Image (cartoon, rainbow over all chains, first blue to last red; front, side, top):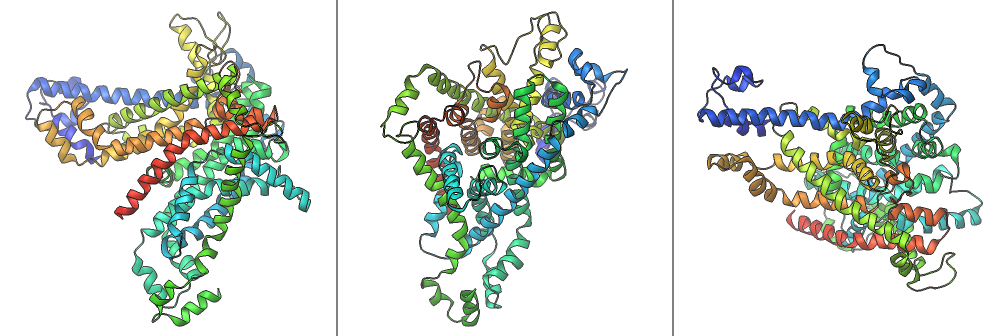
Length: 324
Length: 306
């Protein structure tokens, strides 16, 4: 809010004349130095800016709101009237769309699959990256900077560059061991681990390197091993950046379509929600009672995370771009 | 572990001497990460480049044939054209809108609420966004009740309803709008943080000197946050080059909306043409390499400063 002050101060308005007609009476209560015309102008500007911002926020929210409202309307109404007509009485809402989607369309299983894919798909890369980041930040070894730079460079590799050879590796693995990786959770966990690693290593290494070196030196003098330092000092101190990373990676895996299509597309029983919904769109193009409820179920968890952990969520994304 | 125990015993007297000697410990710590990167990123990258010079079944060497095909086949050229359209329009729209909204939002009291409203789409998957916007663009023939918001607005204003998704005059723009809806919030949040980092004395001084808000925007705010604008723009470019989900969910690449990533997927799974698919992936990589270079250079500057 402090950055608003210069502007607010320059918009002071004499209270008697212009203010009552306009909404910003609080600022008007203060005494101004500027000529009346200018003060009026900036007041108008202020209200105009507020109106524009409200409009933009509305435009950004209305599409999601429409989907949300529609998902609770009876199918017959969805197809004959616009969702906005549901805002005024007579109200007629139902949860049958959700019941239908969860049971008949198999979205309940898909939701579970998404969790089964996303939770290890977040924990494994975070742990692997944290180990590596500790070494990159606080150990000296030949080639350290070059290896780190290589990993940073790989952050922007298009997923498409990796899919065909990895599919080939998985087939080879199956031929040798008889175990399936394609269409199996393990295969997709490994892929998400690899794809998430560069950013995770980068983010954590930068955070670890920013911690004061006295911390590590005194711990070493007290006889702490690397393992001890890592689990007892480093991880507890890094909870905020770990939280940002975990949320970022979880959302990435949860919302991913391409990797899931490639590795799980052939196995609908284990496919996550993004794949299931994309299939629903293909086969039910305009069956809105199915699609609206399905889409909203897939949005529910990310929305809860966003609104409860907004700070970490935003921070993770900020770190991912400003530094990367 | 042995190393660690050994280290405990010998500390603190020999620390500096020991550091010079080869030690296995760091390699154990980075080993797993490096293994993952080599198996799943580095090796596939070189292998894909090799595959792009082989034929559909990866049995014969065909040189640059796949690339020539991409640049001569009319439907593949359309794919490239669409990607270019995406790249220019979506990047400019998200960054410019994000910047404008960041500046505007800075001046209202309900800043955090407005920001949250604009940022929320970032939390959704492209798939969910695709469904949301298919519903907005829903088309019914003229004369019938329009249940899609956009066509309802158009008809209310006296226009004709349009098939936004299938009509090739609009559909690319309609899809790009979905991306802009999702990612403008991202640009806004980052640019807004940069704007708040501008010392208020500078802005006040400019205002005292009689500079108007527009002058301040172009002469002070934009130049001062230009490094951040560059970062946001490169992030957008990397994302947009690989755009897949929106097109896959909303049109499946039909009606003249196909892009490189969707074409790649179709070449791979519908046509089983590994050669062309790999060549498309390599094109994406080539487009990203300058950005990779830019990123590394910036990173090294940052490192030099710390």
